[in-house]
Every structure is written in C-alpha cells, then in structure tokens.
Image (cartoon, rainbow, N blue to C red; front, side, top):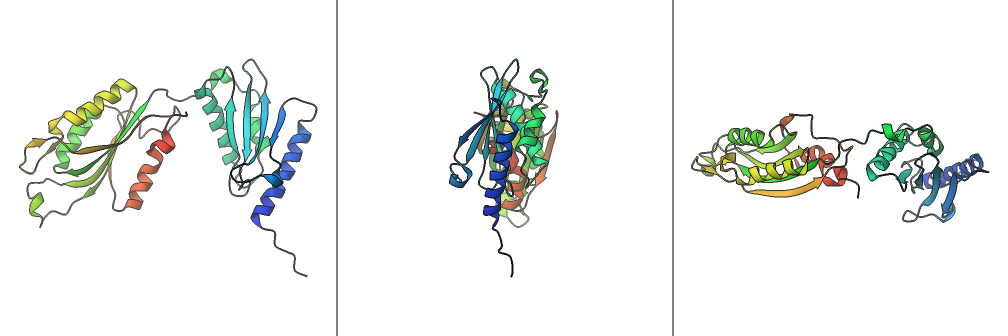
Amino acid sequence: QPQPITSVPTMNKQERITELKALRRDNRGTNAFEFLGPKVADATPSDPTRMRFHQPGPEPFVVLVEMPDGYPADAPPVFRVEGPALDRNRAAAIEDLLDEQAGYMPGMPCIATCLMALEGLDLAALDVGEVGRRRAIFKIDVVNNSKQFVKSLRSAANGSPCAYFYRTIECQNNAKFSFAVDPWRAVYCVCDAPDKKTAVDFMKTVRTDSAMDMDMLGKPGKIQMTVMEEFEMAPRAEAVGGDGFFEGTEYRTDVDLNGLMQHLMAAAARIHE
C-alpha cells in the first residue's frame, strides 16, 4: 500500500507542536518561558502561536517569539525584543542577532538554538549601528546634460554616500534633444547623510542650484525633480556605500530598477518605529 503524502502545512504544524513541547519541557520549573497562545492547532496566519522568553540580568528584557504559518519549512520565527531599560536601538540589535541565527538554519525548528546566542550577552558591547542617518531618494524625469549633472550632484553630496540610476536616451534623430549632451531619463538618486542638517543642506542645494543641468538652449536651468522618500535610517540599515561613495548605474527595465532600489527604500531601511 502506498503511504499517504503529508502536506507541508500539516508537517509544519506537527513540527511546531513538537518544538513547543520541547520548549515547555526544557524550561519547566523556571520563569523563563511563558506561552501566550493560541495553540498550534488553533493558530491562523493572522493569529500565530506566540510565546515569551524572559532574559534575566542587570537589564532584564523579554523576547516575544511568533511561529508564522510557514514556520519552519518556509519562514523563520519572528522575534521582538522589549525591556523597560532597553532602548529601541539595542532592542533592534538583539533582534538582528536572533534573525541572523535563524538564517543559519533555514527550514529547521530553531527557536531554542537562536535563544542560546543570548547567553552571556554583553548589552554594553552591542553593535547598534549608526544613529541619526538620513536618506533622500528623488527622481528626475529628464537630464539634458549628464556630464554637468554628475559633476553638480557629486558637489552637492559633498562626500556623503550617493548613488544614481539612469536610463539613456537615443537622441540622434530627436530634434527635441539636439542640444543635449548624453541625456538621461528617469534618473533615481539616493543619498545618505550622517545627520539631519547635512540632509537638509543637500536637498536645498539640489533644489536651488541652477548649475545642476542645462536646458535645451544649453543654459543652466533648475532640474524638475520629485522627492520619493526622505526618512531616518535604521541604525543598522545598509548604507548605499562607504564614505565618499559616488557611483551611477544604467538600468534598462523596471525589473532592473527594482533590483537596484528595493533594499534602499524606506520599507527596508527606515528606522524602527
């Protein structure tokens, strides 16, 4: 007789039940573990099984853990760290540490192993990243003189990491661009400033510097720009580049652009609220 095939969702639930029993057993007789529910059998994608782990120490904190519907086969556990004396930056650094541990064990029950990384953790030595950085992302529909634009953009960035992504324009037979010099279209610029004042100064320069581009008569003219996002970056968010980074990349399709921009947008890089 052929054996019935067990579906992945059913296997996930069985593994979650087994792991939950092991967590209860390993923490029996302590105050470290607190089950919040619902039971695995009653959990839904919008209401997953949750639990809380208490971490003792001079600055005690708790780790809230969720078992998503796809865990463990298709999704890692979700960690949230809270503590009365723990600021958000240090909490985020601990969450990143737990997420990193889970990333080493894809498809496996890993909650207990991840939490082992917190044993002996020195909160004072946590790498909380760079606090206060600001990112500006804006779009320019048309750049008539790309050489002039790049020169002015570099000057405005003034050493802050800056990247730009552009499409070229074929203008040999286009009378509209007869005065253009290597024109671009749909140019996206990303600049990381170390603080709010530097970010404000950068955007002011971009908006008001008439030397950023040339018009169709070869004279300086203000660029027509659209600010897409301005936000404070998460302390540990990846910078667009190192100090002094300045680089442009040509893209040909929207898919190409998405690959270049997705990890830079606010959804991925904004500070934790």
